[in-house]
Image (cartoon, rainbow, N blue to C red; front, side, top):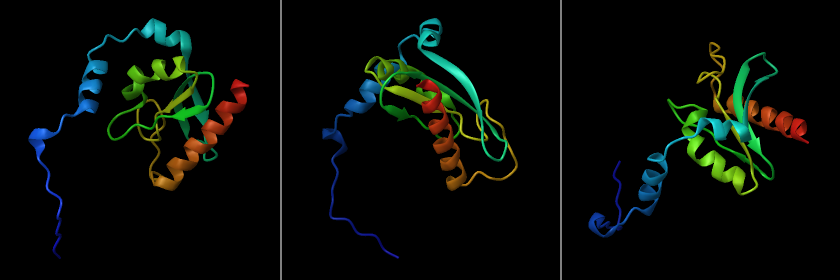
Length: 129
């Protein structure tokens, strides 16, 4: 197999604005007390009895923040408050197997995790109204 590309990239001319913004956000102090005035921790239970921890807060259209490996909901803590201030409902779960959620044997496929998130956001939205 051979991969060819006609694209050339000059790394010296690229300015990474995203990185600079990310660095600015991550160097701020996190005010846990202020955060907890807007957000609350909850536990939802899936149809197969797996407990999923999530943090939710704000009011408005739903924004779901999914962490990567090996993170958990706290990865999003710096961006959650600004999103809530912009009138969004922010939902940040610990997907099964991570953080404060249950860690069952098996059942970590994308479809199962997607169904967890779909079910919990549906439940959470109905509870917020």
